[in-house]
Length: 82
Image (cartoon, rainbow, N blue to C red; front, top):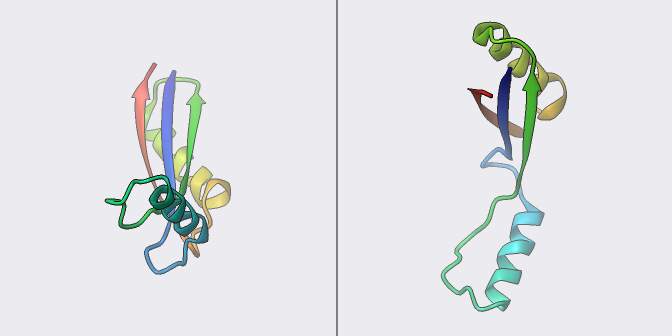
């Protein structure tokens, strides 16, 4: 069995109001060294079987079709055997 760890984040050119809100809140809590925050999403997808090539192509399709919006988001993933 394989585990896909998928990180989805907004493209650098897209405004991130959630990240701005978090950065301001951290500043109010005394974390003055925080310059900026970008918020994102994290998914763990368990995939049956051990064929890494097939799993990689499936995870890429999952990201492109559902997990990420390719217009405004980017994604990276890693596969590990579990």
